[in-house]
Length: 172
Image (cartoon, rainbow, N blue to C red; front, side, top):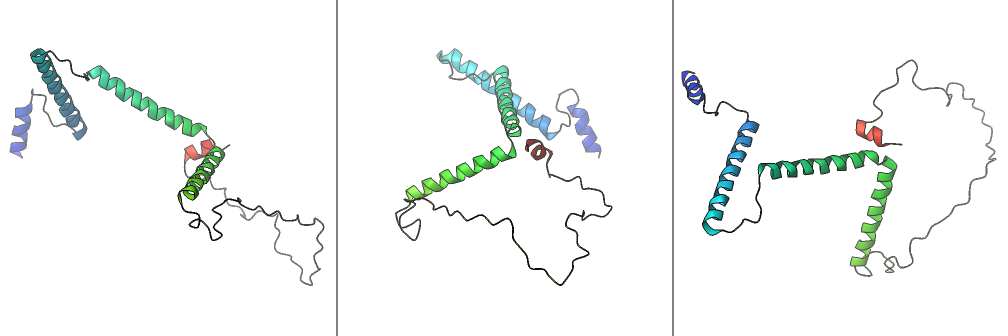
C-alpha cells in the first residue's frame, strides 16, 4: 500500500497521474502525433520535400466531426423512412439479387424445367368467393363465445407495442 502512495507522490506535477484508460489512450495518441509532426518537420528541413498529408489538430478534429455528422445523417435518414418503405426496399433488393443469381447460374441449375425463368412466374387468379354462403343450421347452439366481446376482462392494456422507440417512430 505504501508503494502505491509513493508512486502517486512521485507522479505529482508530471501530469502522469492515475488516469482512466480513455484519457491515457488520448494522451498517447497526442504524443505520437506530436512526434510524427516533429519527424515530418525535420524531414522537410533536411530534404526540402513537403509531405503529402500533414495531419494537424484541426485537420483531425474536422475529419472526426465530418465522420460524426455523416453517421448522424445516416441515422436521421433511417428514422425518417417508414417501415413500409423499408419492407418494399428489402423486397426489391431480394428480387434483384434473385435475378442476378439466376443469370449467373446455368440454364438447368435454376429450375427443373430448364427454362431458367424465361417465361416468368405464372400468376393464378382465383374466383372470388360468393358473398351469400348459406351454412347448414346446427343443432348445437353456441352461447358462451362472443367473437365481438373483448378477451381481456378487467386487465390493463399492455404498453409494449414495440420493442424499440425508433421502430415505433418509423411506422406510419
